[in-house]
Amino acid sequence: MSDSEASEAKKPLPDRLSLDPRSEHFDEEVLRHGVGIRFNGNDKTNVEEYCISEGWIKVAAGRSRDRYGNPMTLTLKGKVEPYYEDDKSE
Image (cartoon, rainbow, N blue to C red):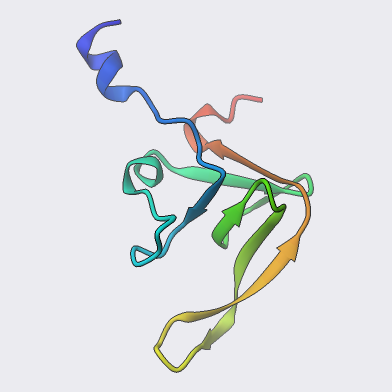
């Protein structure tokens, strides 16, 4: 493996990942590579957080905000399949 390949090596996708930098499930290194979510067979572009083992995603509920200015989210249950966007050659 050359140095350029080692620098491009990606971590395996975690069981749970969040876009919120304040969350303990936030991982900037993984998000830098671009993560896509396939939920119940459909690609989703508005996912704020996901958990594979528990089978849910959180999506923004329109433009609604909570009292702290964070987006309100809805939790949807189903089959969650994360992937790196540049690996989507399926």
